[in-house]
Image 1 (cartoon, rainbow, N blue to C red):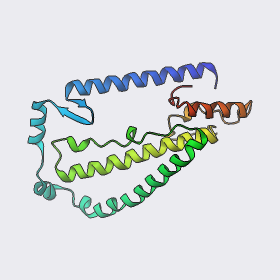
Image 2 (cartoon, rainbow, N blue to C red):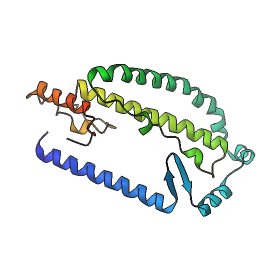
Image 3 (cartoon, rainbow, N blue to C red):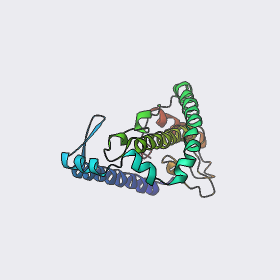
Image 4 (tube, helix red, strand yellow):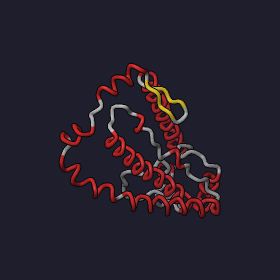
Length: 200
């Protein structure tokens, strides 16, 4: 990767971080304040939320029937998700210390906070908890796999790939064979230092 592209990518990552921070600050100023793991809403917002809450029986009657019918299929997926979680976590705990790769922090990806929303009834909160776990788990796994790919084969594909992880954009170009072994070792050392993916 040439210096110009590296600099542009670093600037882009910096702007993305600034935007993410600004959006978070705007949301917290308008609606809530984060205190540790607790999310606290202003009393007026909390009262408005409670008034918007749909009680269980009304929700059951007005809910789409297809959601209730497919519910058992959706929630049966918890077993393969938990198995994936166990397997990928076990892999990371055993292999990453051997490779010298910093472990992925689970709490950075699997976050449970929607149950603190007062406008959701207990079934809606249950749905949200399931989605928080499933999507958080996929992001957690993606980062573990991204670090693995960066350790073993940090090479871009020749073909365009959708949905690549954040580390992918700084991988070596397809066919860039010059000093491959030296560059690969630099990636591996960088993983041990746990450099953020945006740093090139």
